[in-house]
Length: 604
Image 1 (spheres, helix red, strand yellow):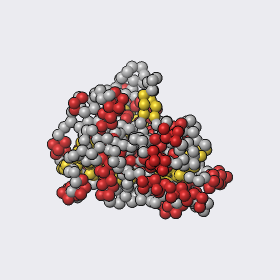
Image 2: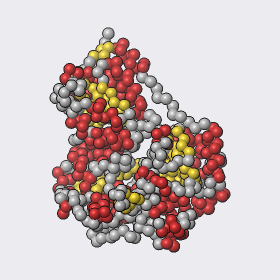
Image 3: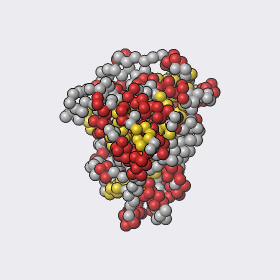
Image 4: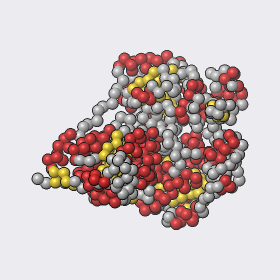
């Protein structure tokens, strides 16, 4: 009877389940796993575990299920602790992340008796249980069935991280052929997702047809493939559409019935229109506090709100108020709806579409109130220029925190079938470069544009070694304002400019960026006031290698529109609702673009 090493068997099964890439940082406690992936997968070594895991998350979030997946492989001890931020981010964004971690051999496990027995020992399962769908330590071959079924769980329904911890001696166990066959036979097929029944579907359509001001809010739970396939039908239905941040790349920005991204940091016209709707069908979005505004009690005040989500906990969490929560697959529901001839804009709803168009045309994405400084780039004009420069099927990766993140979703317009990814839930600095690398490796045929502020870029810049070594389709635009713009703004607004740790004068330090990029073998240019009209810049961006562009942003640059908040006498925060995103519009303009709100609402 032949036998196979457990690590070889596991990797072979992962290949069968669609995994093609392994992002890793080498370590002694994964030596058998490393030898197994070496000949079976495309293996990309990263400088730091958090970078490898973020890249894995973005890789998988950017592909269709039929394409090659990636998983992350880290060693024991610091390898596991280093990766926790990335696991939390994937958990909160409901994204697939298979993390395989090494562990000391079974005889060296402390098992709670002492703090540590084996060298580099830390209990990875205990660390990750609250931020994974499943965490398992494999201690004997029979657990392989549970481990592989767990991998499938991470890929389906509301996706999320899965952690497999494999002690060093378990990796090396011999698995006989009979046991291997039985394990393969015991792997379960994923259960189909729930679909909406016919009566509920009929009731939903009837409610839509009774409305005067309907909106479809498309979230990240709607797959790109489905949304792109249904693009013609969505436009033909003529129902005003909006997207969440995670749903941004599902809808063509040029679609005549697309009205942007409402959010706490949203487009002004999108916020105003959503707040005046009388029917909102929110598909595949959890309607979190960024989406509804922190003042969620005043979210969609006129609307009958229907939320469609696969997770019943999101439907019953209590914020915002939902008139009807439907726990089913949002993708199948949207597909069914668009096959119903009744799910089309009615003659009575036509004035609403015309009104949405007028409001969108009247309110610019780059508002004149934002400051303009000589020898610096206006961020909103940067986004509009980049939007025109990016070719079809580009990938845009803004960072996940700060002004360079929020302004991207307020001002960018994506080209046809472009991808756009961030991790807004964790809102951690330093996600941009690692995430962009994961997407660039997953899509070597697509140009990838990373935009990140200098403060966040500092936190994972070590991964420039991966950019230099492994990718040629990455263009890095580094916003240089010598500090943390959003923190500076917070300290200005709430603490009268009592600065601390937000710029060089208050304790931060920054490198000479041109010298730093050069030390990694990456060429660097500086954007002039001509922006993307500069022929030298356009020629530079044609390089067949990763390259960087420094974008000078003035430290005092303002970022509007923005929801304003106040510190109450009790010390808590109080925020405006979405439609009162600041600064306030002139009263005559507000009445024109928000006629469904009373004068009293305007002045509160």
